[in-house]
Length: 419
Image 1 (cartoon, rainbow, N blue to C red):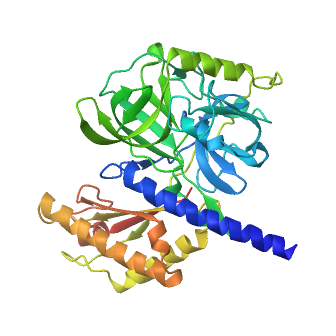
Image 2 (image 1 turned 45 degrees about the horizontal axis):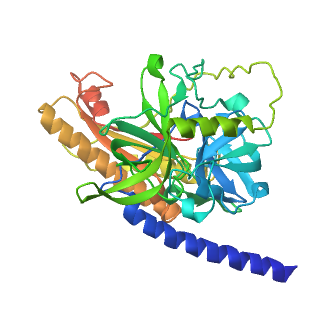
């Protein structure tokens, strides 16, 4: 038994090394210039709640989209030679949070004409996962004909109609380079990332666009946003990988690519939907009423010296308390992921001068907080998003006509944002 476990561990380590090598290669061709991907903070919102992280065993590996209560559309190469019994689907995953739970795969079905690896990154590189549980009845799902609801007033649809070059397209999924290891025992968790950029060309049934992607984004929906009267969020394809294309005329450019929906592919998706297991008829599920969220209250470091950005001794206990709070939250459901630091000044001096002074104070506080966090947990500050800004004298909290009021306005506000 022990020997079997050692073999399994060795195989997993080899797979991890192979994956890292693949991701290094993918990074060279799927991030085009400056990385413009943006993390989706609220995956409970439509359409991000429909977008799923696919997990083989304990390993996140691709993306997909609910298109029926028990059907997920994805890239065929994500499912090829994999075991449905090991596959789980996590809609709206947000790091360690699974706001809608998970669903297990029942079986896979592939595009009409799909054969094997020869069809990877071709117009036949799409497939569906049939689920054991109709999780989309609760979460909602993308639809072929335009459909809207209270959770999604704009609504969704799919289209095989042509779209012009230069159209901005959206893409959202779970890139592997943004996954991280957390918890004890350790587990790999992923965040959803969205990119929006220009469609360059449709050629040989494939869309080529400038959206930044990465390994793990395969299977992500590609959509254009329109008014509800003309389809709402119209899915026009499925992302399948990186690309280095030569367009007619011989001009090469870096791009990424997806299967472009055509009327024939939309008909084939209808066929795949008809093959889904029947869903029990249930009364409509109303989303729970969520209590209003109270925004986090900032910690205030005030009474900076006049015209000075340096911290004072009375600021240090506040810095230490912030660092302890951040480190203690790590690995919990409400782990702090963002620290916002805003510098302020009193009304003495010009607007431009006070903006610079406020930024200097915010930067000084940032340096102290980073140092305090890393003393408690080395390197932890690099896992956080730390944002600094200055509002100068624009946001006083006290009367600038008195010395006491000006001292209170010479401050830095630190807000800790959890999940």
